[in-house]
Image 1 (cartoon, one colour):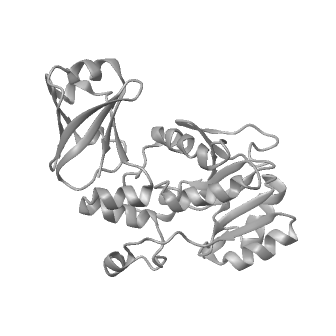
Image 2 (image 1 turned 90 degrees about the vertical axis):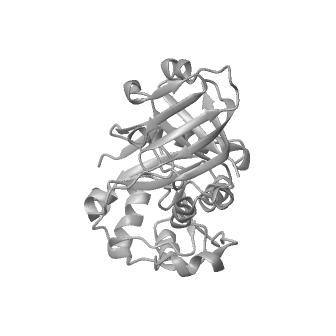
Amino acid sequence: MQRFLLQKDDDRELSSEGVSSVAGGIVALGKFDALHIGHRELVIQASKVGAPFLLSFVGMAEVLGWAPRSPIVAKCDRHRILSSWAPFCGNVPPKEFLIDFASVRHLTPQQFVEKLSKELGVRGVVTGENYRFGYKAAGDASQLVKLCDEYGIQAYIINSVMDKNQDMVDSTISDKKERGQVSSTRVRYALSKGDISYVSELLGRQHRVILSAEKKEEFVCSKNRFSAPKSCLLNLLPKDGVYENCSLIVGDGNQLPCRVLIDSTHIHLELDQKDFCVLDAVNNHHLLSIEFWS
């Protein structure tokens, strides 16, 4: 049996031989970069008929030659977000199951569904109406339903969650897959404009940026002020500028109001709490989180 890449919390590792951890589950299919409200709706529907999983691929950029880019959600923050979806999913947080893209790239639509059925043992799939799959995206949602029926898998196709701001955005996004639905492309667009309200609307939460504190010598701290180079960031920032309504999160989720200034090379924080030393937080934690509020 082929080995699959499986993500658990912060790490990705090869699963052991034998029955896959997704066997008997209901998998949402897609690319889940942003974990936005459209993705949440997929797992909500999956949870109505079984144990919900997000099934997607790793290594697509390397195989397809895409230029590297920062993720919208830091890898180490995905578990927190999925756990926050549990109340929408019968108090069962969805899990992620990742497949090495190189191992499935050349599969036809039928071969892909056969893999879902015979190798992974999934009981059902949920996806959006615009989903494409198989080699060169040859299969569409209607074909997925037909093939799943042949292999004894339940298939649920749901309507896309539409972006309320699509008229404003459509003319600026060239992605041919865009039909006005909430998408990771739109989240990236909103971040590039520094439109935090729009970002929050698409995500269904505040955007959180994670900084690694591994290279503390690159930080500049003085009482309630803190600066870090952008090279320490683990995910995508909004555009350069000043953001007044933010929070620094340290330890067990304690949120400290702050002002954030982003320039071409650094991110700077100024805390409202004058007696708090950011340096102490940096010394005590490997990660620092900044949340942008609309």
